[in-house]
Length: 411
Image (cartoon, rainbow, N blue to C red; front, side):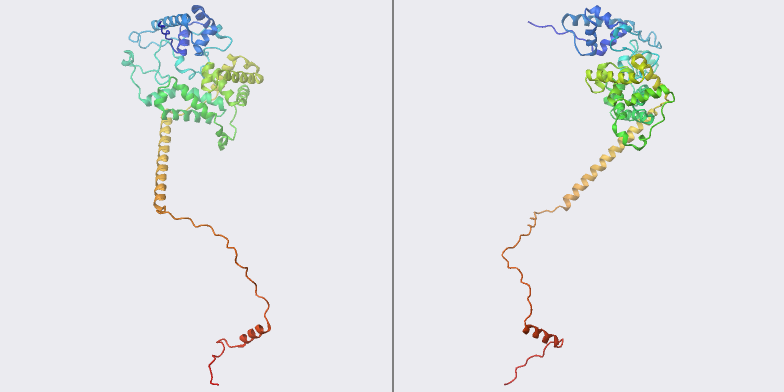
């Protein structure tokens, strides 16, 4: 008996995007498939996969939603300059127990690099290199986007993600210079590994993870300029919130910022922080409790997100230019390349010198000395006898040339 192959399903993130694009809540989609809202949440997070008749019904519904989204998308030839329509907001009752599914549009300060490809509008073509819109022109009007050079794609990603990343790094560290430096180092690393970053599903998320890792490095405490505190925010409420954030452990602070500030889901937050989903949930709960203990109004996630966005927007934080970041990355690459070449040349020279001066034949080592036994001890000189004293006096009285030569005489 031959078993029919399972109906293919899109990736978990695409399932959620299709549901949100159709303005359906999890309850509404669950009612149409005949399952519970918890099952839909598991399917969209990737923690479980439907099987059997539920899988077929779910796949048919997703195909219908995809066809409807394609039908709503305008043709490029008809309206080449039309802007993308805003994505309809989900029902607030869809996920009351966990969190808000989409960040409010009134506070977009921290959401510029929130979910990358998942937050692209349904009736707009995905932007190349992480969010930059293709240039308008005859090619765009004809539906064909011109290919970007690596430098242009990198510049588009930097202009899209850098401003929000600097604000996020400031909330992580409380230091303005360190925030800018973290983002610049992250983009320099991205430019060094650009083929890998360009093919990544979420280039902005790749850079965000690198910036967070550099900003939270414990080695910054040994730098002289980071030992002095920076001026706090002028507003007392902002100062209180920033101090409360900085008192949190670094993993809890990062989890709170990704979930309540950027707007990532719990599985995505756990994956970016390299933790399990239960561990990320525990960190989030502890961080919220700590903040609510100092500022009671922050117990509401909506208020917490709004206050984080306001705190990040108060400071005038600007990233460096794209050309400066690219040239800095290339300069660092040249420096380390030359350093590696110099080290290799020095190693080869030391090896050649060792081979030149090394002995060409075996020389046995000198054995250590051994103690000779059986030799009688040296006897010290005793007192002189009368005859010996007389002889000594006689020798002293003689001239320096010595005694006269004795000549035999006839007797």
